[in-house]
Length: 439
Image 1: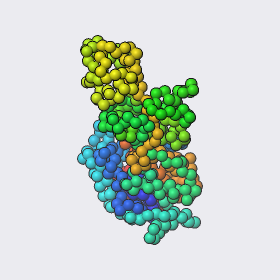
Image 2: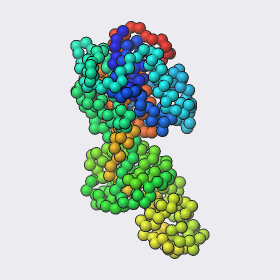
Image 3: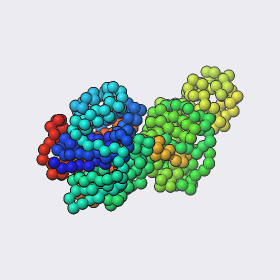
Image 4: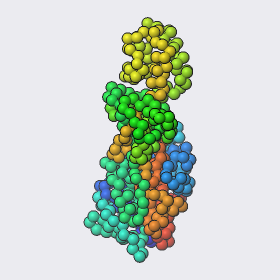
């Protein structure tokens, strides 16, 4: 029986250990935190959205094209749900999003821990891995207070996101020491900081809308509201990404699921020294002309209303006041006296609200990272290193990330299962534990 050492006890590491054990290996998990699976408890706001019914290559992003999809295709959403049901996690589906029926992420973690115990997987917690040394036959894994010897190693040490849960970027250091290149990890699924000074006045507002990210040359920056800032000099903005949902306005900028979804693109453009702009449409249901017509009729119906009350009932008061200011409309102006020019300026403020993005929030606030171990140096069929035979990768340590919706956890399950299976199958294993129908 071969010995597989899994470095990292997160979602992908636990799955790699279970899979390797299913396929005949003796397995040891090395985790530097005091317990395994801590980050899993915070996923899906503690409810653990562990996969999604909607699956396609576009949900798994990497500098290396469809690398991740080749792995997800081997162990995908259906296989994940089947395995979790076998472990006792009954799935509940809502609009394609899968959660444990209990509604608690702890249920998923408990099920995984019980399976690890049933399989006899060794778990070494509170053990920092300081090095992985390839030997003529197998590996020596150096720990802060000792060492382990194994036939194969699965590096599943996570990224730099959400450091309080244990993701400290140590996996990148280990991969680099083994000769791998690491694409600069950047915060993703994270809030965006903006330049304008009006955010403290609108903080706390939650509003449905669309957020789009654009980038352009750094020398086109100007202070204040970022209206057409990237068009200066006749250059066009470069569209990067867009998403729709509830936008949250904060003291420092913008947040909410749609902002998270586009943040990876903003992070990369900022890292590359570009000027980044977010354009928000706070009434995507109507075209610009449609909203202009609605406002004109609104003014005609109640011409005596003051401008400060004109949008009451349509939008939050904090935004109404800001839009009036940005449109150059005096708050005591009668609605009936608003010119077509003033109404058009108001429409632009509502549907083309532009703000300059200056930074993402830190790795500590990010849910995942974009970037990681360059997947062009990893076998797309087995997740084995092309530089160090017998070394496998799984999870966030690789340059793979996805949007909100269970995709990052699906990548953890898929990559963990494949890496664990391949490591076990190539560790001179002959016997297979038949505790599951998964092969």
